[in-house]
Structure formats: C-alpha cells, structure tokens
Figure 1 (cartoon, rainbow, N blue to C red):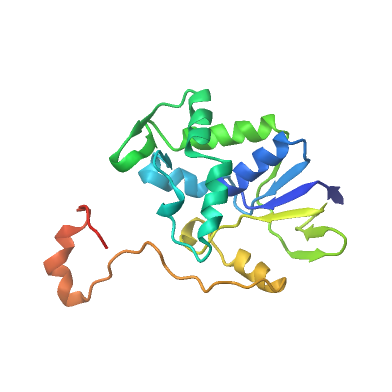
Figure 2 (cartoon, rainbow, N blue to C red):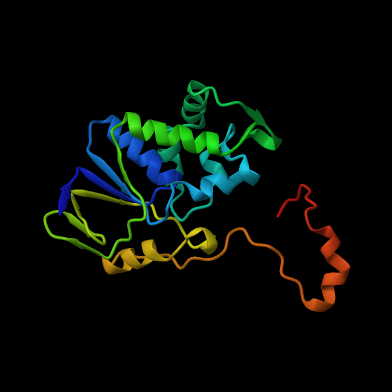
Length: 216
C-alpha cells in the first residue's frame, strides 16, 4: 500500500506539528509520521508541565549558532507575537514569568490540543506508532514503515535530538543525515545537571532546586 503526499514530516513534536500546520494551510497534502503512541511528548513535560511556549523578548542575538543569520531569517518570518496570537485565538490562559517567559496557567496539554486542532483544520494526516524501516530517494522520497509506504517530493526531518531518551528520543535524525551524506555537527549536552562525587553529595545535595541569576 502506497500513499502519496506533497510533504512528509518525520516527528510529531512541536517543530513537526508547526511545520505540518503551515504547509497544510498552503494547500499541501501533509502527513506526520510519529513513532510514539502520542504526539508532543516533550511539549507535555516542558516548563514543568505548563509549557514555556515562547518568550516576549526572543531575538536573534539570544541564539548561539555557527550561522548567526539563520535566527534572523527564522524569527523575521514567524515571531513570538505570531504564536501568542494563536494561543489567544484558542483562549488559552497564560502568564508571564521572569524575563518575558510565557507559561500556560493550567497545563501544557492546552498547547498540544491547540496544535492538534490546527492540524485537523489544515487537513494534516497523522500516523502514530509508525516506525520508519527504510528511507530512500529517487525522483521523490520514499518512506517505508511496517505496513505502509509513503511518497512525497518533500521531506522534513523533525525528529529532535538525543536529550530525553526515556520519552523516545533517538539518534534517528543524525543517522538519516549521515545516510544522505549531510554534514553533522557532533552533538554535545547543552542543559545538564551537576553530577557530584559521592563524597560531595552530603555537602551539596540540599541545594537541589535552588536557582539564582548568574552571568556565565
């Protein structure tokens, strides 16, 4: 069984869903393939379960990148105000915390439900528990899952990084890039806990959960 689309998106997280919504709004036939049993697992745990969905002061200079111009282009085309307008359209209550961070008043589930509804309105097809067995390219991309074959001229890889393995994070995106001989920057942790030697734990573990403003 083969299913043709205009665009295939691998990964049903925040990036994959936003991409699917915008492509669907442009009249594209879009399919999102997600290997987990539900969408947006990382959304649901973000911000302590309340989803820090954007920052009012998000600007290109806040990003560190080998290509500093990428953030300029991305943020000029879709701004924090654009996403905030979407949140307000769905009447999701939110509040501002330190330095312009915006959180849901109730639950991150509100944001995920909003994205799922936007996908539905845009005609996006969602396929859960769909493991990609093989991906090739001829005149178009061919994605083979367990019992289905998907075809499309455009493919978006939004499978995320390696940060939280227990909610399904894998190296799939990196492996796929290497398959197509795309240069991969060696990943390294960006947000990590302190790991203490056994002899130090009794002295410092009471500090767990304490936060303060620092300049690093």
